Image 1 (cartoon, rainbow, N blue to C red):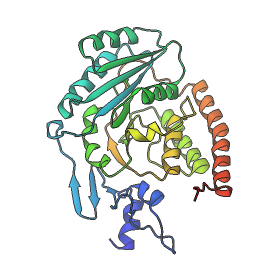
Image 2 (image 1 turned 90 degrees about the vertical axis):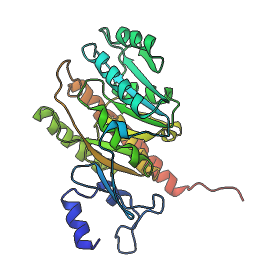
Image 3 (image 1 turned 60 degrees about the vertical axis):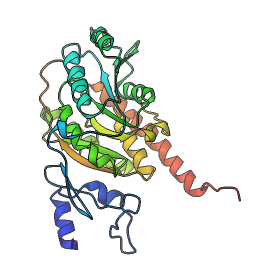
Image 4 (image 1 turned 180 degrees about the vertical axis):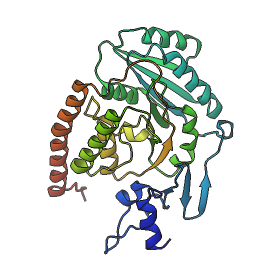
Length: 311
């Protein structure tokens, strides 16, 4: 690929932004192929085809075609989702059974005031691979994810919202990619949310880019697949809506790799979204400035006092 093709593809969004962010550069600042991954990943316009140095790799088109060797944990944070939680968990369980027998579904009931917990508990009686963890009070979206990540013991960990706005079958397109990356990040294509939420999301994305240098298409898309060992070594500190930004910042700080894939986003049919509530936004901004300052100080300290191994 020539330079002109590279920058044309980048401007059109055909080349994954992760390549430009994470790839090492030469003396003139041009991207070089990562030795860690051994490949140049370029997400095509549909977000489901990856071009490598060896050629085009197309993801399977049906869930029956996919069988993964790794074990898989799915984390579902839930808050007052009694209207959809049974359908969501059942659909997820049905899809996972097609892909692997070694899976678990961890539903973190974050202090729901409705029957969310009772419904999941009933489901777990007939399917032991469904686990329920209850927060006695609502602790926040980030806290629910942290609880789920710390509870799993599988090779891969995937998380998705419980509100029925995602199609779990889209996960099958992530499996070939996780072989070469530490994370596969979904982005809503297109996003089915009111214009105000889209505007808030755009502003938040710009803030995260300015403060942390992290730039992905859809920071808070709740459809992401990670290698579980990343969370085993990770100290997650935020507990609100800042959680995805923290994970991506620390993924970048650790020199790990990711790629991005477009996923379907469906209109919310029942229930009420809480992400746009003023208290949620204010908590996220507070965590942004508190931990942004803390992490930048840690980066500076590491530069001044690099880790040295004893001789």
